[in-house]
Structure formats: C-alpha cells, structure tokens
View 1 (cartoon, rainbow, N blue to C red):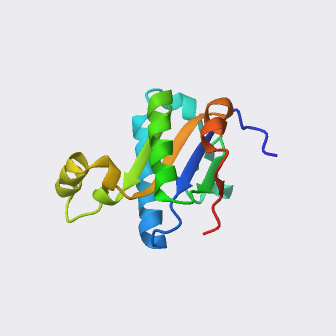
View 2: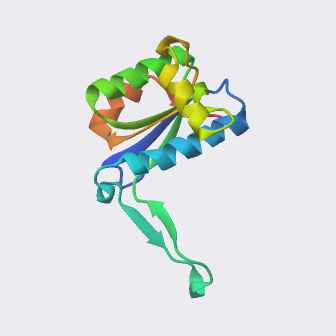
Length: 143
C-alpha cells in the first residue's frame, strides 16, 4: 500500500473509446484539472532529479493516480453529476471536445444536450473520504 494516500487523483475512463482518443482525452483532462485547482500547492508536485543532472527534474505528483474503468457512458454521466453536486475538483472529456478547432469544440460542448454526450473520461482530485463513495463501484482499468 502506498504511504502517501491522504489525497488522490482518480481517472474513470470509458473502455469503449479507441485507445488513442482515450489517451488524448486523459491527457487533456489531467492537465486541465491542474489548471482548475485553486490552490496548486494542495496537489503537491515533487521534483525527481536525475543522476549527474543530465536532464531537468521530472515533476511528479506526491499522491497516487488511479485509473478505473466505467461499464458504460451512463456511469460516467452519473459520476460527473455527483462530482458537481459534491463540489469535488474534477474535469471531464466528452465527444463534443473533438473537432477541427478549439473554437468549434467549445461551441459544440456548449450546445450539446447533456443526455447526448459520450464521455471519454473524468479525472477527480480529493481525499479518499471524498472520492471513495463516488468511485467504489468502478474496477481497475485494464486497457
């Protein structure tokens, strides 16, 4: 068991999405959750230095990053709603966020009917006490 698990990142992904698109979405929502964090210090990034300073240090989070799998799109939609209601730091990626330009993607997302969205994934950050009730029904992502 990892010692530093007071808080954690949890990604819940849709295994029905093509892997390259899924990883693209995961990268975007992970970077985005860092941007959304009001107090970046609470994420606690550490500098891992390489021997003989041959490369700049890697910035790696102190807390675990767990990747889980949803059974279906509805589970992700429900998780998104629950994270909103619980005011948990989170970020989601949907099919409306694909397109020819960022402007098109933002417009598509704004105009999309929430019931029609196909979720690629959601990343959450919080304490184990906050996240466990929302994520306990998901299994580890197998890729």
